[in-house]
Image 1 (tube, rainbow, N blue to C red):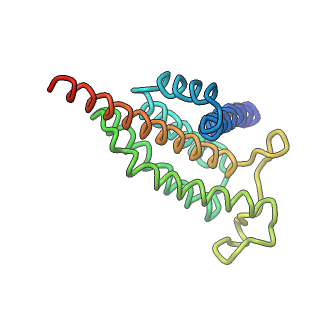
Image 2 (image 1 turned 90 degrees about the vertical axis):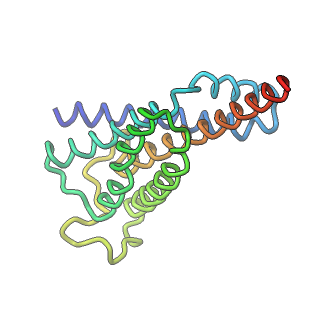
Length: 194
């Protein structure tokens, strides 16, 4: 069962990689190419109104995954794993409330939390690649430089967390862009009525 779930989470991570890299290509390339700008707009419109729900799903799956690994598979989280959990777990509650209230302002609270989580996950993954960077925050009992597994040769637990945080940030950026577009349309409609 552990191998199946590990593969499942790794495949979700690959999907997150594709989405995040695709989002970056559209965001950056759209500044230089009209075709990419059009694709960026169409992609943002395709998820319009679903950004919070999609971010909630990502946060919930990441939370479930971390709980599964520690509570079912008995993998003991290291210090940096706990820091990543501190950043991820509240996002489930925040996005749940924001989805229920349809509150686009969640981006102001969720993006910094996801950004901090992404930085911690990135540093943790770096420590796994270069163990000499491990600092005093990590214990010898559960070293932060150790990895319980590397799926596909590069996907570890902090890598998975990092991709989840990156995907959440991408949805928050799309929410920001779509909220700005909605505000511009509302302003335009109000001025047309006057």
